[in-house]
Length: 156
Image (cartoon, rainbow, N blue to C red; front, side, top):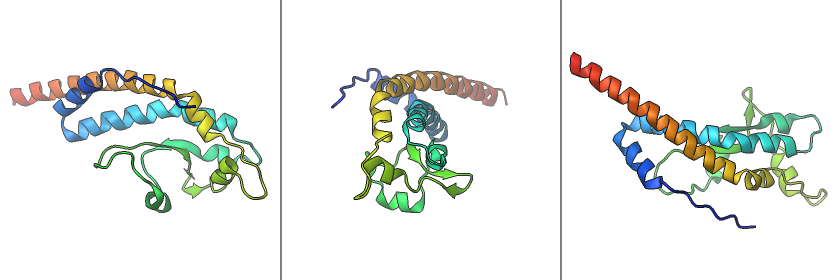
């Protein structure tokens, strides 16, 4: 199954992001990504087989990886940008998702029981629609903040 997506307005969003300062633009993108990926995490939590619930509790959205994950990560883009991740990870400072990959892909002794990939594929349109909506809202808020800041600086 190869989903096809059409993302309209990307050039306009990029132009609006470039008008903001670096920190504001990064915050807009980070918030939009984390909010857009939350439906995937919720879907994965509902799909994962539950024994003690550790893997289920460990599924979330974040913008940082653990050291081992950083070593294995192959970024989609080659330049330094904002990335967000959804999957099993840290819960309360302790890694409880250590069996997630074994459940997803299986082992010699256990059949695969995928939960992340189906969650991603079933929520693809929701993710991109949510990303576009949140980006638009956050860009509008950031532009208003920048205008207020410029007005305030002009008075001083």
